Length: 167
Image (cartoon, rainbow, N blue to C red):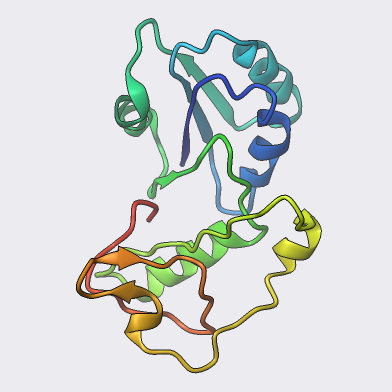
């Protein structure tokens, strides 16, 4: 189950939501946190072409944590993935996460964020060609500040002493 909290992002949803419609995804649950734009209208349009979308509009402001908790209550899938209403999911991401979860049963499996700047091309960025070949754990986090660096890419699983928000 993919759970996506949303608030006033109607203008992004037609690009974002289809990226979550991937192999292994049984449902995309969009929790609308009382948006004042046309989010509901846009989601209903998307539901015509993506049949696995489920939509819930909160009657009161519940913020992101409340929206995630609501999504968990609604979810019917074996696993939950928290998506973002302003983030595109790279093709094959969910399949990779499920594969790694099945191979590493006692682990929390996390994905890496790729941040785009205004001069980058989305299609080029999604090719994700950059790999950090020689790395240590300090490539991914600062032990003193506990800061997590989500931009490096490794060709193998990297075990960290903690978990980021998306798993």
